[in-house]
Image (tube, rainbow, N blue to C red):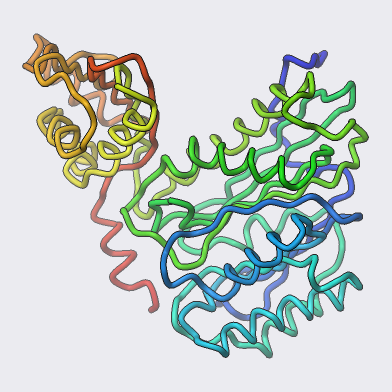
Amino acid sequence: MQMTSENSIEVTAFTWPTGFYSDATHAGLKEAQDDMGWLYSQVPASAAGVYTTNQFQAAPTKLTKATINRQYQLQAVIVNSGNANSCNGSQGETDALMMQSLAANKLQIDQQLVAVASTGVIGEPLPMAKIKTGISQLALSQSVGITQAVLTTDTHSKTITVKCLIDQQLVTITGFCKGSGMIHPNMATMLGFVTTDAAIDGQHLQELLSTTVDETFNQITVDGDTSTNDMVMVMANGMAGNKPLTQNSDDYPTFVQAFKRVLTHLAQEIAGDGEGASKLVEVNVTGAFNHLEAQQVAKAIVGSNLVKAMIFGADANWGRVMQAIGQTTAHVDINGVSVSINGMQLVKNSVAAIVDDHKVSASLNNKQVSIAVDLNAGVAEGTAWGCDLTYKYVQINASYRS
């Protein structure tokens, strides 16, 4: 297939961009699966990050934020699952620094170019003997094992690779993430990693990441809980050979489109893999007073436990959508709201529309459910993603540590 600068192509095979290496290993933090991994760039890369707003921000999160903010550069990321290294006081901070130092020494790079990420149980000391052993086992390869090593209650890895032409050079953007429970980002409640061989300076990358996260990861919710740990980070090493991108570059819109495609896909993957979830839910809001209010309403609907339970039970009780809308502070034409589920209109001018209720309910058994809302208060639009609420969610979280 011929590629043009207007044509970003999603590649089904997961591949690392030029100059990136990775590996994963079982350090013993989890019973059997790989639980440690790293990413490494052949050269120092521009870097950006967005972080959880939870007040109990974990030690590795704080360390990585400080590391990236120092010069918007990284060369490696060391990550573990099975232990969050959160709420561990000064010892947690010492252990995060030790992880950073051990990885830097093994890779023979500056410690200030290493990010640290952890996910798992909160409040348990990080078993540093296992961490040291794990890092000693890591090598530089094209392994994709890290996409599995970061998982906790996820049911599958979440990955995507997109390629596009920038400045007549083939650019690769590859992303992967973990996230299943405690998903209500602002940012974050998950771990997301994006690598690219595009050339773009760190501050432009930070602006792009922050803007795109607001439209993607911050528009997903599983359970309304915000984690202590998680973040999305990006590394861009420039090895594709394009001229450094700025907002004035001719191909900047192409890169933005490809980048957003990566983050949107990962956000949808997390929403659809919510703990115990059986259905992916997408809410599209139109007719909003402004974009912010459109996003607010979309997220309120997809985050409503009543709506989520309605979808799980395949019960087309549209009143639950209306109550979710009404609880927001958004401008609404109270006599002009429309609601559709899976393309079938249930509400017109804020009252029941003539529809085959059984047909709508039957459609709620689909693995993907769409809800469309017109607030009739403007022209702005917004989208959010989530999942249904099942019995299994309670089962998983009632025994998370056992």
